[in-house]
Image (tube, rainbow, N blue to C red; front, side):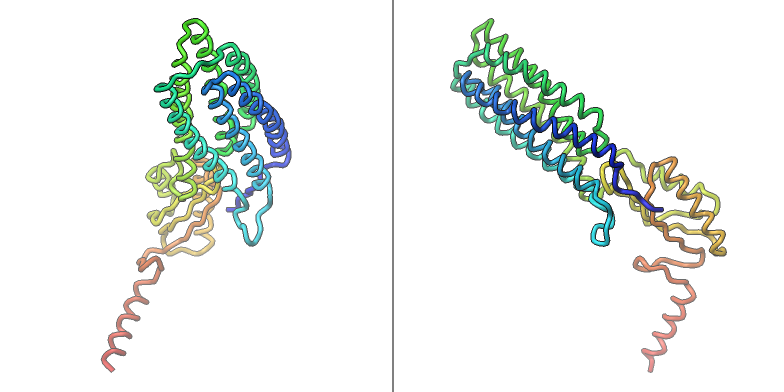
Length: 318
């Protein structure tokens, strides 16, 4: 079966428009947050600036990935650029993990040497961030259909929550005068960033290493294929992800020694089961016939094996 890799142009254009708006708004907020963090001596705000800068880079990577994903397949890229988005998501999430560790280290340092902060400025800037990040997250949610855009959405949703936490922290400092609230809050933000990013890294690594897709059961798929009339058994079964939304399957299927016209009907039924029950549309199925045995990945009739063995024995005798 054939796989159409490129998404629709209308959907891609809408996604690009959302990402363009998000890029401009995020970069502007990064500048405001960084300046405000320096003036307020707030590590929480500076960590938010760093986090939002990583969001800007994440959105930029997602934008580039969406562009490449819409390019058609070619002789040199027979699957197109489906994994461009997966690679972008991996880089985004890995960068976030590094940033979360840096925030944690700085927060621990601040706990040992507290710094006075300006809670009112923290709260004003953070309030603006909640609105901006919330709007961008809502827009991304409407187009987040693959792991690339889900990683971008995760960035912005995480920012919305962590920026709201900055407001709470500023209020706590304003009421109690305890400046250690700022680094403790940063530790919680770092933990949230790390936890949410780790899942994306694990998922994208599994795709890049061509592991079995998450939620896919090989025994269930094998059982579904073997339930098709005419199929004796299914072996050498491999399933992997081409991108975050498309899967491919390759396997050997043993059937009776029947005419090609009858085996074609079995192939149609197998592809129907895989497409409608397991959402796998790109398949490579190799038929083998009863009376054959598999030798080092190649299918050779038993009679030919015996003949070759006998010939080799006589040749050796001469």
